Image (cartoon, rainbow, N blue to C red):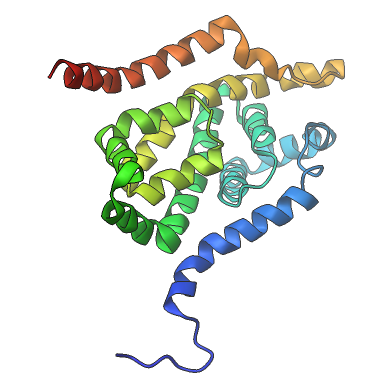
Length: 243
């Protein structure tokens, strides 16, 4: 057995360090940044942002996506403002793809940090324990695609928690990334389109109406996609009942 050198971090602590840093930064951000990334801050700096975009478009895209990754990866406040900014600076298209790319990369960072620190061992412990929790894990794995898409389409589970659960139950990274990218696309499209119209909102001195997500013509299709995602789970349950 290899001896641990004095002052060398324990292997377990080293694995947990990324997720612990994320949790620490997220906690600090909740206290110190909650009023910094706001709609009023976007309104005050809109001219500077537009000038920077027009002078350095490729760099502006990279800076924006990187900033979005940091916001999501460290669960900092301001994700919705970032989404609006993506629409404001880059339009609905390609702004929605920049928003979704940033959010997906940030989610992957949390997923990998959680799996490195706790996920693999936690998943093995659940499998070995048996009981209701093990059955829940087996059910999630049996319906991975449906559950993953449902968590993204119907945000009943907070985004940060929805990044942790798949890591804890042993979901594959590829499935997590694909379901995140496409699962958040409908909601991101709505908010990006709102951001694309912020020029007129700024001109009137108003704030954007974020309740648009609950409008029937917007909410209906999203719920339809959620129902379509849940259909395989329902069919499996019905087949088991028949058996």
